[in-house]
Length: 205
Image 1 (tube, rainbow, N blue to C red):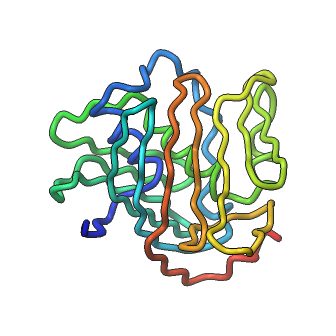
Image 2 (cartoon, rainbow, N blue to C red):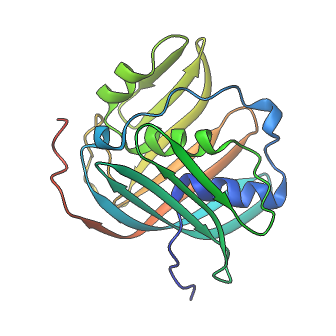
Image 3 (tube, helix red, strand yellow):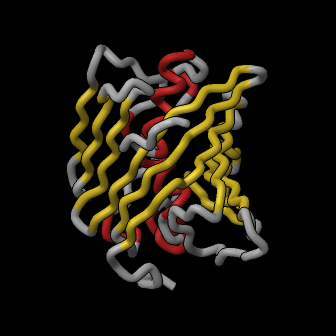
């Protein structure tokens, strides 16, 4: 059984992609502006397992995410417990540290954008990401579009009969999150193993 090591959701997209060279950096346009950590409406620490799939290639990594009103932090580690990446965003400045000559196929900004697309309130995303960006939802998923062309789709798959609200999603052991990259035809399945929430999650209802 694998040990849950602190690391993060979108972060690991890159750790895994970086090792397999599945998503060339050149295909990714500039990212939309990052939203403030406070816009999430919750304070949380989560440990997650990430499974990356492209064709027959499948890779797994463990990850952890920390969200506070003044800071969003992603810390990535390898399966051996080596720290590979740390991202810190305070709402104004993004600081990053890459270890062991880690080369990522996506920018640090795109890692956090994917995370915010998955978990920030829908109203905050739609207000903060204006033209040429658009965030749409069909009730079970969210799609980030650029000039009306889909780039990334986040699909929520509850493990129970519970149907989550479509305007707000928080890392939850009862729900898988699947992030699909349409240009690279890769998917990342995020399974939350454990969470600790210390603030109200209904701030942006």
